[in-house]
Amino acid sequence: MRIDCPLCGCRDSREFHYRGTGKLMERPAADAGAEAFHDYIYMRENPAGVNCELWFHEMGCRAWLLVERDVSSHEFLSVRLAESVTRGKQ
Amino acid sequence: MVELSPQSPFRDPLPFKQGRASLTENQPEYISAIMPHQGQETALSAVLKKVHDLSLPPAGQSSANKHLRLLWAGRGTYFLVGEKPPDRALARVASLVDQSDGWCSLSLDGEDAAEVLARLSPLDLRLKVFKPGNTARSELQHMMALYLRTRSGFEIMVMRSFAHSALHHLKEAMTSVAAQNRIAG
Image (cartoon, rainbow over all chains, first blue to last red; front, top):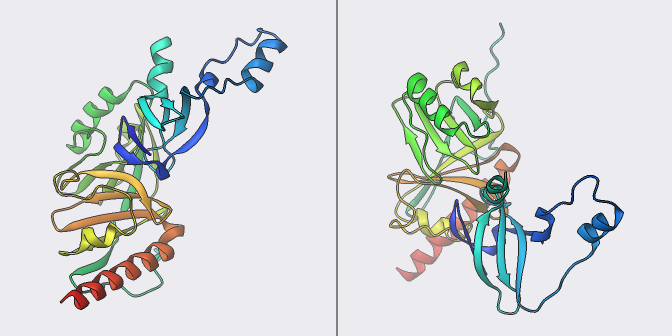
């Protein structure tokens, strides 16, 4: 697999670490209740298709990336800086 | 004040030469990390121009003047390398951290430099992709490294605690490339 880091360009996947589902970007509000936090922490979809994931360019520029990856073909459909997504929301 | 004499981070003697590649130690006086505060990149660029006559390089690039070089060193991080520490005026728009004793630097030069490095790093080292003045964060045999392409080869920086391992792997790769080239004639 190769991942097209927005800062470094296309790099070998050995430079990156998988850091969990992209759902982790959508943290519930502090007063959302136990049910919402249970879902946020434990409940995961597991589709044999396109997944939204967080990757960390640990051996490279150390940016967090929000990617769309097809887990049945390992194709990366999009790669964005997680910070640009967060700041876009503010 | 007592002036302590600097010690090389490398235990083995340098320079080291094998075939058409040579390895030498660089001893920059200062290495400083400059990390712009959120949204302050433009302001940092202006202050840098004023106090150091350097421009803020985009990702994967560097800028230089006679005394200092500014290397892009990762997301939101720049390394100021050379004779001087960063001017205090930069502290208004960025965090400054002294890294002088935290990193070590080697120059790998010569015709076979790229071939040697290709054994240790997954980077695309072709000249049309990785040009003189370009920088890259990547790995060197599982160690996190900062690369700079120069006119004669590469500068490789790793954390000081990796100095001996980095030197070992580089020397091994240089020896192996030189041996294969000898056999091939």
